[in-house]
Length: 333
Length: 149
Image (cartoon, rainbow over all chains, first blue to last red; front, side):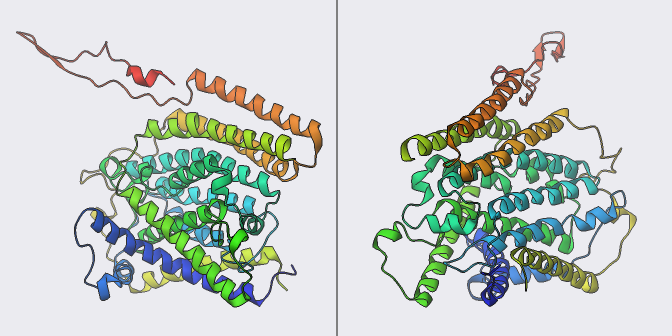
């Protein structure tokens, strides 16, 4: 309560604005990087180097006619696209962008993050059900099963970070990594977290939800106009959010590597600028990783996705948690 | 004065406002000329048959049940993880026993094959002289590799 100040309001505005912008940049980057990987040009006509392409896309989506199938449930069909966007915007509330630069510091923010992340599945599943199309329903079902399956390893990986810190505040977790990033202390947890985050955001190699070759458009087959735009926006927002979460939990948040050992004391303003730039660069790298993986690795089959989630990642993450707990209890303590 | 969770509420309101405004603006400026063909459910250009809300695979339900058990386990692990350095030997080992018991159930479930997504073996038609193409339905079984865990 005491820590909530005017800066929180500023962070709120800036964070939401930056998130929307970075989602737009992610869309642009995806297309440019895809073009680069496939040795072609990509969008380069709208504005300098095609930078205004996302704006043109949004304008086009705004002007398109909206089609709701008569067979479907109109209300749920209209509500479903809002859910993933709102949950993505909610997530950013607890992420620290620098020392003291966060919107709010609630006392169970790790649990809050997990809870909000699992709300996102409702949007996809309800969209699949409300459309009353066979492709949509299959996409929605797959999304539900896949996202809840990978939430378990994700949760265990986060829990294996929490035992180091002994606090459920994301801010404390970020501050703890001043000397050693959790990627060095807990590498297996970091790898599990990255894989699970890919599956949670429904990106390749786990994009079974909208596998074009078998499900047409997946859960958004029956969506058009701005409602489709919302799903599109939400997908890239989740890419950005998951990059931020990887950075925050495992790659030192706003700290340079081993900064605690060599970084001198800086004035608050310089420190703030440095923190935000470091955080942004790391997030940008993970966004690039998402795109890179998408255009490099082919899609899994559904039985392989489920096998990886349940009989590989889940036991591995539980074992990782137990081993780390035992080491900390017997050796360090 | 706004509490910490008040800010979370602010984020929710801002998010909802953003989504609402975007959808409302789109509603104001987009054309609206529906017709029956346009509003038909998409099925690759065919006229759709039957309802999409069919009985789906039971495994999705089992996955949901399994998820519930493990999610509760993880939620119990979180408070334990915060305080486990101070709570002493007994509480430390109680959690090990708890995780072990759930793990036994998990291994049982894996062994029973409830989490196994079989793929049917491909149906390869055989050609015979004077008989024609034979599709061997009775020999159809699962692929050997899928039978393993």
